[in-house]
Every structure is written in C-alpha cells, then in structure tokens.
Length: 175
Image (spheres, rainbow, N blue to C red):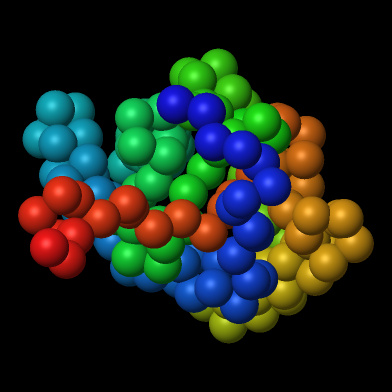
C-alpha cells in the first residue's frame, strides 16, 4: 500500500513522546510473559542468575514485537491509540530488514545515557532515571533539527512517522 507522502503530516513530538510512554506501559506485559517463559525454560532460580541471557532474550523479543507490528500494520497498539503510523519515505509499508534496522537504531534513545552511567560508575534507580530522562529529552529535541521533524533512526532507516487515522468503513459512512 503506497500513500502520497504529502498527505500525511508528521505527528507532534509531544504526541510521539506520549506514545513512547504508553508503549513502555504496554511492554511491561510483554516483559512479564517473556521473563516467565525465559525463567521456566532456563530453570532460573534467582533474578541475578542468567541476567545477561534474560536481557538478550528481551532484546530479541522486543525486536520481534516491534518489527512484526511495523511490517504488518505499521502500528503497535500504542501507535494505534495515538494515531501514529510508520511508513517509508514514499509512504509504503516497511519491510522486515528496515524494521529490524530501525529497532536496533532506536536504542540510541538509551545507549548514550547507559554508557554515561557505566563510565561514571553510577548505580541505582535515581541516576538511571535521570540519565535516561535526559537522554530521551535530548534525543527528542534533535528531531526539531530535521526538516520533517523525524527522529535520527527514522532519517537513517528511510522511515517516517505520520499521523494516520483508519479510513471509515462503509457501514460507518452516513447514508
């Protein structure tokens, strides 16, 4: 499905960040189910036992989750709620290679903050939240520098977020 690129405006950064937060809430359920499956499969008895394996498994599960929704409907559940859709620059559907590349590059929201914490030797909940929040705000601000207000990972991957509402069905049209 190709849509003319002029018809779909980029959503505001505020709406994209609200969608980002809502996605985090929804991913809590994904983490719980994937963590349970991982723990049972590996017979994990303690939270710190096999922590790297759990992180790698969650990274893979998240990648499949996002890539599946982006390639099939262009929207995760949070994106549907906020009327945001992922398309290529020409407005067509995103393929698996591009979706996976976008997923990996989207970790740039967090990697600089996490690396800074590691280099500074800081640990704990508050430094983590402060660093990640500062990184998210800085990364979101960078979208203001892009001519179409797109995030860095979208510019690199040839994708863009657009405002999109499902067209009305025939039964919803007035007679």
